[in-house]
Length: 149
Image (tube, rainbow, N blue to C red; front, side, top):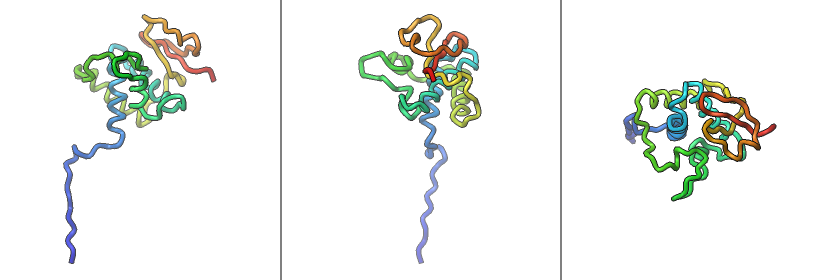
């Protein structure tokens, strides 16, 4: 007679496969757009997910948000990732919203309001690349663009 051994792991030790991806998306929303209205935060999340779906970019959320990182350089696709500042989300209400939006975006509960945008920039700058893309919307302090179809 054999006796099976049951191992009980506490729930907090079991991470869903998407937990890191969700955190990468939440951090991007938080650090890129926490000062924006919720619609602006959603739009930033949409851009990241649109890039994941586009073969020109990495096929994971964390891959997209970390793209371009090189040690001692500051030319990341998303400036928060290589700005040298802490990546801890300190502001409780904004952190909670970013985490909720990330979860709902990943689960498909929020539709793409950017019409397929893969780029955005703050209205305070005028990047060279903007001329080569189609402007889609301005939402709050960000202008959103997509590749021509």
